[in-house]
Structure formats: C-alpha cells, structure tokens
Amino acid sequence: MAAPTSRSLFILLALLLLISFSEVAQVYGGSNLRPSDCKPKCNYRCSATSHKKPCMFFCQKCCAKCLCVPSGTYGNKQSCPCYNNWKTQEGGPKCP
Image (cartoon, rainbow, N blue to C red):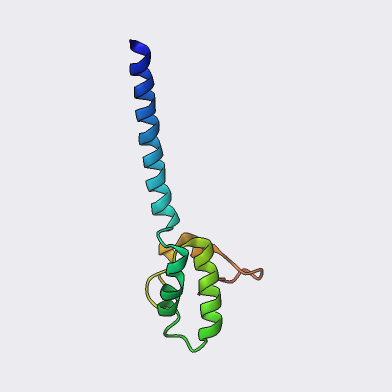
C-alpha cells in the first residue's frame, strides 16, 4: 500500500518542478510571442526609423530566433535578453 503513495508523491513533486522551471524559463527567456506575431510587432518597432527595410529585416530575424520584440520604437531591449544580447561579428547590436 505504501508503494502507490510514494509513487504518487514523486509524480506530484516532478510536476511541480516542471511547472516551476517552465515559468522561470518564460520570465527570463521572454518567449511570449508566436512567429506569426513578429511582423506586426516589428512594424511598430520600426515605425519611427528612416531605414525601414533593414530594420524590418533584422527585427523579424531577431524575433524569429528570440520570440520577443522590445516594446516601443527604440530602447527597452533589457525586456528581451536574447534580442538584446545577439551581436554582429563586429560586436555591435544585431537587433534594432
């Protein structure tokens, strides 16, 4: 009789750990977008620049990889660590 109880407890603890880790990953990863959300988010992100084509190209590339686009038309990159930390070969920011 004790074996099913300890097994049930183990399964319950495993599920709780899984839920906890998935919430931590979501908070730190910023991955709350679907790929289909990238274009509208990047349209807004690039709306204030005079270089729309390259901005859209790199924003969509970054969004596809990171599934996150910072809010606003400039700055706020700390809200998307993946987006913020992706650099060019020269060490500059890859994502607008």
